[in-house]
Amino acid sequence: MSWQVKTMAERTGDLLPGSPWTAVLYVLLTILAVTAFVTLCGLVLIYAERKVSAHFQCRLGPMRVGWHGLLQTIADTIKLLLKEDIVPRDADALLHILAPVLSFAGMLLVMIALPMSPSIQVADMNIGVLYVTAVSGLGVLGILLGGWSSNNKWSLLGAMRAGAQIISYEVSATLALLVVVLFAGTLQLSGIVQSQETGWWIWRAHGCGIVAFSIFMIAGTAEINRTPFDLAEGESELTAGFHTEYSGLRFSFFFLSEFLNMFVLAAMASTLFLGGWMPLHVGHFTVFNGIMDLLPPGLWFTLKTSAVIFLIMWFRWTFPRLRVDQLMRLEWKILLPIGFVNLFVSAACVVTGFYFFAG
Amino acid sequence: MLASVFPTLVFYLLAAISLSLAWSVVTGRRILRAAVSLMGVLAASAGLYLLLDSPFLAGVQVLVYVGGIVVLLVFAVMLTRTTELLEDHPTRGRQLIGAVVALTFFGLSYCMMTAPAFADRALSALPKNDVAAIGRALLDTGENGYALPFEVVSLLLLAAMIGGIVIARKPAALSKPEVHNG
Image 1 (cartoon, rainbow over the protein chains, first blue to last red):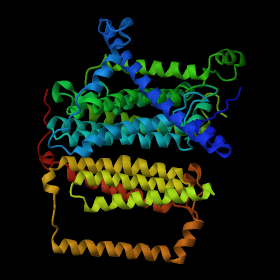
Image 2: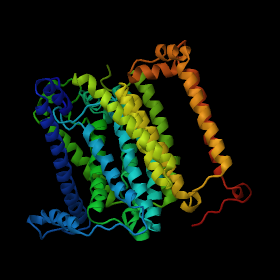
Image 3: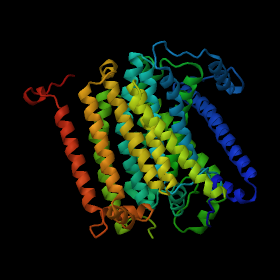
């Protein structure tokens, strides 16, 4: 069974020669769909986080607004939007306003490249993996500027910690990405998904895949500033870190991009290591593969991404926060050497064709 | 008609954006705003690369300059106190040096680009626009390969890295034994 990848950008291109206005309408609809998806995804993730954390701590979580507290997030959102919007008096107002926008833009631009199913992907770039790593760098700039422009010592400290942490862990995350790029032989995200038709890279690349996946998950969790790496906003020492001075809509931009970055990380992990929208296939066992194909690709993507998101939430409610020196040691003395060795070993595997279902 | 006008329009838009932002980088008095403007300039040049049909170069531009250099710059600015960086009136000598450097750079790049050898060389050695081709050209030791420049740049970066470590190392750490607490 072969998969036809058709992106929104390609469909727009098809519409363009016939009637430009239909193409414009299609682009507008795509933008609307992405915005709606981001909002809905944020609501669901925040609700899930509250419920998961509650059950990890033997609580029930939100229960009163709607059935099992389903409308709680919506009520909180409305409250957040109605709050007063404050810019500190001595702050650099322009940068203060720009920072959350940059952070949000970094997340949103990555969202464009994610292959959610053969038919749901906004743009399928040849340089997909490079694009994702490049564009997600905008987020850290938003955090740094937000902390600096707040004119507050806690914010500044939080931003510095976030900056140092993200720059450091980006190296390991990229090394882990490169392993998959080596095996798949392409940077294109849909190409990487299609290269997993005989099996997901996490096990087809035997040891290398598992090590790369673990490194990617650890470094990714650090890059999105979640516990156990949430030193940037450690509430016990820095109140709320870089977004201490933010309120209302601007705070919600930071908040939403933080949660959606979790989705982006999970989606990238499942695309690279768990086959993305590709159903669970084992080599050339046609019968088994046929049964697995009964589920639509979009559902596979959703299931895998949700599983990874649950894993990230599990991290958060299980591990204590690291100290700054532990954080730096973990990256530079443990993860980075393992990442380099892993990259060399996988290069050797690719060259010798020593992996499952090669060629 | 639309297809031919559109890239020109985008080019002038990007050029205008980079020029105005570059102007604000140089004239702006607040250093962090200048850094943000610099980010805009670099992003606009990534756009120009896209217009020239080299998405890989554009991606690397964003990855290295926007995600790396500007972030490090902002980081360095945050480590220093802002009052030290406010320099309203540079001295005459500094202005002179700045002018000389700028003029020399302009003259050099003008001579380079108008030299016929440069144009020929640039076109013939251009790798095909595809990541694999660029990778092969980078490690190619042959006629049009870039192995030597690549290695020289790596050596330069290594030297810079070692220099950075030497500068950052505390002199006390050489004599005093390390103290472990806890």
